Length: 552
Ligand code: C2O
Ligand code: CU
Image (cartoon, rainbow, N blue to C red; front, side, top):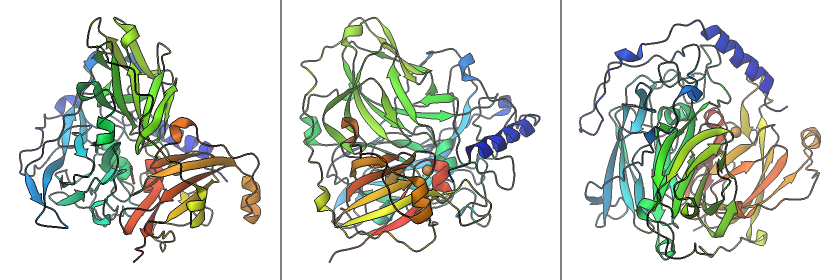
């Protein structure tokens, strides 16, 4: 049986009706102005919003469009050099980031929204890295001790005997030693920190960092714990791509705000079990603003687009019908630019795109998600010109051969059917988080993972540590599989389209399809995780540890 959407909608509908009479949890006017963190000492926050939703959510359609400039996150500065954890004679740039509660205006006409940000901003500052040059980040938890959003204490790893606010930072797409990867159970609490080592032995790519604490990742990221981590290298430098002020990250995510402009997170209506299996929202936020605008010159720009939503997928288009040139996917540059009218991004996926504004001087172009406006580009009449055309070739890419694989694993994505009760929980290969590790690839070996999606939803599956290539997607008979565990294909294998044929770290697995990826488990031996990046799923058991086993 697939996820019972009807039951979920019914439950959430009832929940909304029941809560419609609740008074607003607080008056926005009474919000104190919080200082931005970074002063060093850990701040105590005495005031917090209640996790109760007010009745009707704010309708973003009523807000004026394109009145706030697009914020571009600041680039984080290093606070000196510190010894490398592997070799103390080697000194690496050291960065320090405090996670803290902050207030920020999401729109000119809204009251400041209480959020949790890295270095007091949402998104957090961008970390700029060079391939091959390691760095250290000390991640400091300076958050309050009570959560901003409703914690479900029934969820594995989020039980009431654990501190309510826990954090652990993870750089999504980074090839890092296991102790620096942000293993979900290795969280720390307010007043504590951990220093992680990012060797950056990987190609130029648009990575991002976000919280990964066991059982509350959906709430911590929704509260604002996310930012960009960009790796650059010589191959990319040698290409004539837009750079500097013409290279801009766009972190896009959805939120729901209450009438006071405060974050609202959906609950099931059962106060003892508030978790909901999915949460899609009406308010699209881009770099921390609703409907921002960006003044651009009539020339090419590079935008590093990230879907940082909990569960929503984005279908991005330009209002003038213009094409994007996609130049990179999750884990680096594509072999050549791919022209696309629509950029499709599932949660955690990235698309590096080039938009050429040169033919549109004086015009206004809107970036849209479906029929909703995301942001506006205002093309100036004059500005710098591009010296030449967009490079026709980017980074050479060799497609991995199936013959390289020493092992093929068949792994299911299926609704749990072994327990009564929670019918909306989805499991990886029928196993829970705390069951023994079953995926143990050997370091430097190549494997094919065949992901059988037995549910009615697409799930974006992410593996830590590695990058991979998509081999194909092929429809199969779910009923035959459920009845007798026989894999019967019902159609031909579909190879990935060009924009998905480069390096990936997150793959959309469609319902009723076998999605095959080919992976070399290179980098480090140790324990990592793989999971669905729909954060509500990830938090409720759709995540598994896996071990890369040393080969010596
Ligand atoms: Cu985006 Cu396990 O992470
Ligand atoms: Cu999922």
